[in-house]
Length: 197
Image 1 (tube, rainbow, N blue to C red):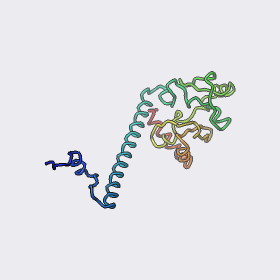
Image 2: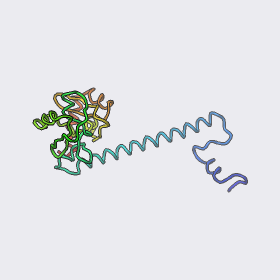
Image 3: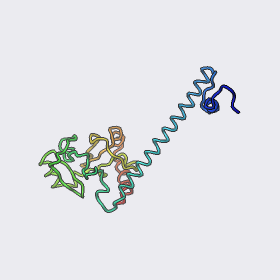
Image 4: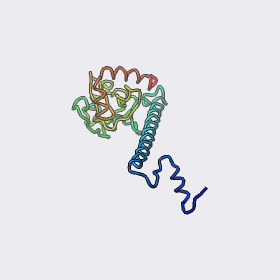
């Protein structure tokens, strides 16, 4: 039953769980706003978790899509270039990311590596397995937690016991390094499952 002078939308809103009564005290109004805020936070967190889970599943599916193919196990762009085009040898020699030159490249296991100098390319060509990043250039901390995750930029890295590890960002790198031997052990086991090798 609709009362005179009151629009239907006002009646619907008045019956809503989170609607604030027209004449309430500040306490009731604050409680209603807190309920609304809580509901929005819960919904947002649920959406982030769902999207993260879907992204991890898609990355894992893509990694397993070409079983037997080495490129399926590598975090390369659509042109087959790994590490966002950074020189893999520079991480060992200079201890920092150095952008590679597209004119100086090498292919190893169907993946293209770019180099800043002909000397870096020669070093890579001589001992490619030594320079190849662990876990295909995916985030090592992500792999330790059972997820294939991209790296934001190549500045979150470590060379440990002669091997190159990348992490998604500085926070992931700090977590990875906090217990590096245990994280490597977990990542090695997860890598075999994530890539089917």
